[in-house]
Image (cartoon, rainbow, N blue to C red; front, side):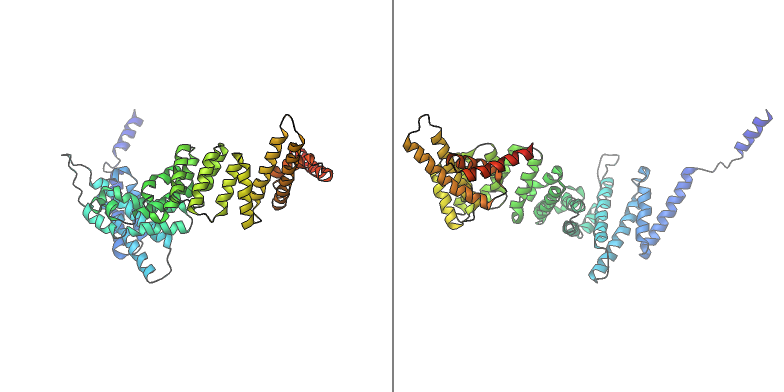
Length: 412
């Protein structure tokens, strides 16, 4: 009983004035005073910012106006000091300078959402919006500059953050009065760079977020279409992939991206009439590009227009005797004609002579193709095997037979 009485007396003897909340209030008050001193002196500004941020990390302090305003003042002075050093061409961390700008915008945009919260009557009357928007608008260009700076450093994630923040100002209530969507001519270019960063990061959502606006940047329009097409392909959206390739090819038929991918797709699908139409459109846009004509001969070859293939390949070879695809396509045109004749049920002497003649023509083209592309045995191996067999060319047949057997053994 006595022990219980002593314990009760000891408990009652504890100071009644002690309170954790009271202690925290003292710390908060002390840190605010210290941060204000730092800001006023222009020294230890990063420490002032950290002190305020630490308290703002506590949700109980979210609406503490002084914390937000002092933190922004610390950031703003850091920005001014950094800007002066850059202006005077003194040594300074450029990346750190741009990151201060980013924090300034993040701070005031977040504070604006608090400042604009409805009062007890349901009315939103932000007190600082006009003043803060005016301050930040003067520095907004450095969000764009920061984005381009980090693009140059190939730090695409960092660059995207700046460009996203720059573009997002257009929808922020803080900047409603500036109507950036209509008044800022740099918006499409910023959207292009944001799209480019998303593309380089292979993040479809980031790539597509500002794609519509990026397409208004005429200087980079063809590249934007390229990034979008690749993104749709990454998403396995074949319809949009082809639609974008088609739009790109229609507007930029000689741009090196759209035409070959459209050709590859339709060739894989066996749509050779479509490939032929693409080649004809490309030739109409630039008749000097032999690559377009080579694609045309490939389409014609698969459409069994063998005589036309030979004629157009000979024209290509007259202009460039090293064009391997022309040697191949002409050779295959003759080869396919010979094989077709050989499949006849009754071969008379005239047909045999025609077949032999076709094989001899095919041999000349295919042997030259082999010389130009020795690594493409998959394309010249079997045709030459068949040609040498039908022309009774024992030595050449034995050599090609050994090559094909060796290749099969390596596969097995």
